[in-house]
Length: 152
Picture 1: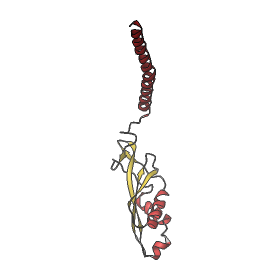
Picture 2 (picture 1 turned 30 degrees about the vertical axis):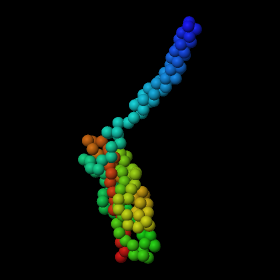
Picture 3 (picture 1 turned 120 degrees about the vertical axis):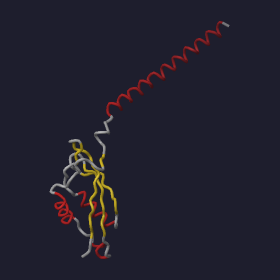
Picture 4 (picture 1 turned 60 degrees about the vertical axis):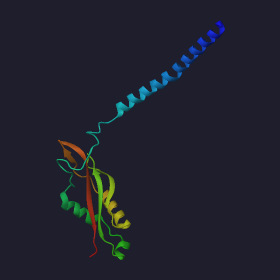
């Protein structure tokens, strides 16, 4: 009887030791991970918000006329598209970053794969823009540019 009681006590102590050995380090790791994620998390309300409209919208350096001149000088009409009489307006969307660089290019309106590729290549070649501003600070702004292809 005494021996059975000793075995139960020994089992309870070993089970408790096993729980301590397994769960205490796991809990410490979980706390470390939450501390690390809270330390590295950015304030997305101010840092990375992408505006559709802001107080001062981004502009191409030199204005609309300079942008149209750039587009007409850099854009090349693909030969196959000319031969088949394909024309239209490709609209490329992008984000003007806080430093004026362009990123996250997406098609808003497509016409033909060759025209689409040429329009994207042209927009990606654009120099930095004047960034958008909101509350006196440079912000990220979603913008788009139409690239027209018309046969004369």
